Amino acid sequence: MRRFAAIGDIIGGADRAIQHLLLPKSDILFASMNLIGIAMTLGFNPDDVEIPTGHFIGGRFVTAGDSVPVHRPSDRQAFADCAIASAEIVDDAVSTAVKTLKDSGWGRCRPRERLTALHRWADLIEQEAETLGRLEALSSTRPISQVIAGDIPVVAEQIRFFAEFADKEGGELAPTSDEQLGMIRSEPIGVVGAITPWNFPLSMACWKLGPALAAGNAVVLKPSEMTPFSTLMLAALSVKAGIPAGLVNVVLGTGEITGRAITGHPDIGKISFTGSTRAGAAIMANVAACGIRPMTLELGGKSPQLVFADADLDLAAASVTNGIIANAGQVCVAGSRLLVEKSVQDELLAKIQARMSNIAPGPTWDAATQYAPIISETQISRIETIVAAALEKGADLRLGGTRLEASPAFYHPTILSGVDAASPAVVEEIFGPVLTVQGFESEEEAVALADHRSYGLCAGVYSRDLSRTMRVAQSLQSGTVWVNRYGRSRDHILPTGGYKRSGIGKDLGRDAYKSNRRNKAILVDL
Ligand code: NAD
Image (cartoon, rainbow, N blue to C red; front, side):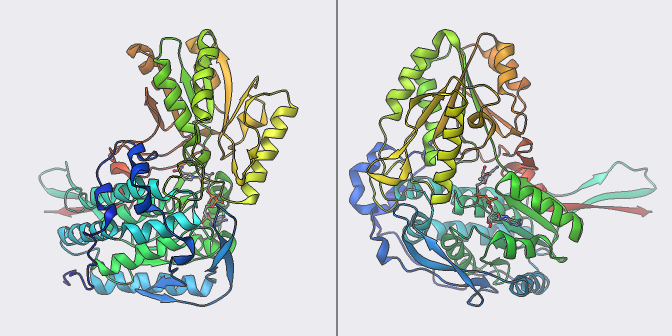
């Protein structure tokens, strides 16, 4: 069996000024204010970034086919092209993955060898934080300070977290009679087809790659056509780390062409998708038409935040605000529906409004930027359309409701009150910094209002009454409930995934590893 040795130079990064930023921070979405103090070491000139081109197949960059332009969200300038992989190129990537799995023995080796290679990859990701971070910040909406302080150290940690399952999570012996030996053997699936969205390109790619590789599979991954470049570099670093070339393949392209070719490919054993509910439904239909296989679907959300009168209102105001303005609301778990006990509604809204007026917008490559631009003109127009529709249906505009005057790529944090469950702003996943407000008078009413007819991704509950928080958490129809906080911690063991049309299956946690394996029953007559 082949040993997976590092095959490339590990580029040293110890002398980089950013290294000391790679310290654990409890909040991955908001870089702490002390980052501002070292602003000059993080900011970069967007015209100076070298962009990788083509697909990454078999450890090499391959250029072929048509392309679409990629824009910088901050100023909408087109700065590079994203290739579009045809069905033939996807087939080439899948064949490469199948052959590499067979030749390298990745799925059959001593599991600790996979663990070691994945740890090296995580180390390289941290060492290359500056280059990787710039590629991420250039085409996505992630401000460079948040990528460097949050996204990159967290994805490195998550890869190490999944690596640890490789030699610890296995099958089991079945309780059969003494005349028989029954085994439940856990095996890799083969080739995983992964498709990721634009909002957190590196994180979403690692949520797919980490468990799939640790579990002994190969991957063909398509990032969003709007944010392809950091994922390409991530794949290239996997080869440098000694993960066999051909195990991590990245094909670029649109959902309609490249995505469809992946979800319909007969040699892909599992589909792992993160994106909109609309695309998730199209993928389910294509998978059903082209061949049945397991799927993980991480889809949209319209998550409520329930604030009871006995809550710490300062804490709740800070948390509710962060929950909707982080990445300018372009987060699947955005806490976009505030449900507040009527007796404290005015007091809480005043606190939230004050916090929302304190934003730091700017280009993603500027070190001082904390508030993200909206990814595209299409997306900002969609926000405008839904807000206008809600206002027409009687919503009250408490704050915002427009683009930032000086920067048309940014949308002002917005509060809409006077809405009900039928308001377009309450029904639709807006994917922007728009918070709706509904009042309640009892716990039962709060839980009923929280129940969205389509989505059930996350919820936040704020109260000093432990019994109440647990009663409410148990009643809510959502895959995650945060109590007196809003947002993920670095406890990667907690799975994430939706109820209802927010998805099927889990990313992160033990579930994510297990869903990249399949069980075989073996029964021996002794
Ligand atoms: P999207 O669905 O438009 O695209 C996501 C990815 O799917 C892209 O790579 C796209 O090219 C591809 N795609 C689109 N249609 C496809 C098809 N028919 N077949 C195959 N691939 C297809 O989503 P987006 O705009 O990139 O991202 C925003 C959405 O992602 C939001 O709805 C958000 O809630 C969701 N999201 C969910 C999670 C989660 O963990 N639940 C995390 C992040 C984002």
